[in-house]
Image 1: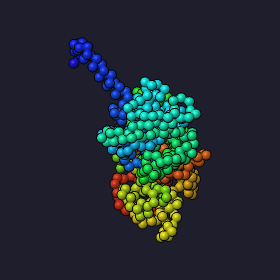
Image 2: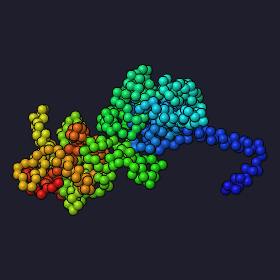
Image 3: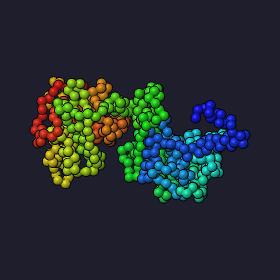
Image 4: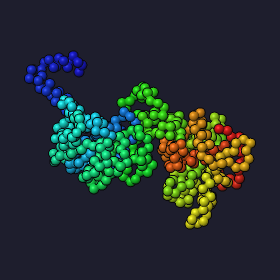
Length: 496
């Protein structure tokens, strides 16, 4: 039916029918305006976060800017306050009224972002109820004392069971990090939403408040403060019940390519991964201040005529890690194409994993492989060799400069600078599926000018392999059987 036909049909209605139609349309608009929870359709990544709450007692959405992180935080909170969950919801469901907190950096940001996302603009009566919590569910509100503006301390919300029956009131309290840790003491809480990075002591208090209720904490932020202790834990030391979701501009359908390019151009280079991908940065403290897109390459089969080498870093409490690299002799480009990492396992277990890789590829290893095992009295490197791993004859050292004789040193900086130079000149590439390698790369930083020696196992293994491949790399495809290095190969000319 075209517009003319619609108009003709409308004009043919009686006055009473027209009034009824207008009233129905106004009611429909009101339902849309004041019941956002009923029609809001989350993006795929947002639904993933919702469903992760089934098992995730502490969930972190660490995302890019402008992709809806606060919106989905408000959506989850509104579901728990009202008991109204969508049909697709596979996350945790509360079956009774809840006591919740929402906390941000300051009273102002908590009001302007979290309170508004949940309830709409408090200073405008026509906009109150336009947030995620439906207007017909909003009860009594209590203003925050000593704070200007329409800033609320708490709001009561009607809770409905699965049959849609009202069974009582939920309550949400608004807090801010600037209030201090003591304001997060008190009674048990069912659910806490933290928007923006919380200080460690605030986060710990929130975990404590949810212990007795077996409650949940959901955090939504872009990591503008870098690798704080909370971010570090979720990125590198997640405990059972903790869940990390990372989302970028590519996960937000409302951002087209032109918009993303225009936005990216506004940010300085060292902030672009933070803003567009939600990846924490250290500014000048990054060991490799290079955009990931400059060193990422698509997966491909390594040609047989490319030298290959592995690097191995030993560990126990921290992971034992290995990487496999190849060198394109024509373009002088190194490709990191495989990885292995595992903590608190024996040399026997690690060796079994290494043997699954093509056996002809030699493995560079550090000097601590000479240390003997307290139980067996056997050197660590020898244990790997006894299990059939193709370790190089001697431990890793840097290449000697032209004209030097003897053995190279083990200093870290020459290898780091060599890799950085390769990255800057397009001669160092990494396959995109190496998730653990990329995690370490993003967190590899300096503290007071020195490389921070934690969570650097794959970076160390990469350095051993990169600085050794021109001397010890071997060409081939698949496994060639019992190949072992019995001595050093001829050293090639090596320049940075």
